Image (cartoon, rainbow, N blue to C red; front, side):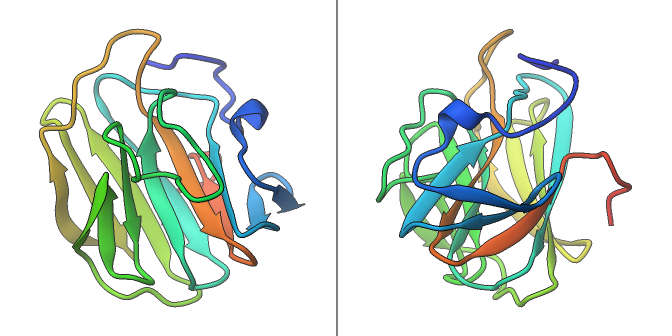
Length: 169
């Protein structure tokens, strides 16, 4: 199901802006106005998830993006038709445009990012509680081209990513 290595990490060449690894393996912080990064693994079938533990509670767009999703200093995860994101600061979901979704988040929250490519849906969780289906009709992909865990952060925002190396909360 994966496009790249079995060991999930951050795809360094996908970084736009300046993302610092504060503490290995995946406690990250944006050092620029808006920074984005994708994981080195992508999925195109099955059910997958990862978690984001919030160290700050500002603007963070957390979700899934393809390789074709352009990252710039103003556009990140969810700002393109092939990327999907949740931002609890603005209580919105993003796929090209923003719509109201979810709940306001706070420091310490754990956000579950789930993609179900059997049902073509994306659901987000806050501290283990479903926020409901955020997106339906997620476009089908194929081997070698799929959805990567991805995140965009405003300057000074910090979070810790868990791709499954530790038990999910």
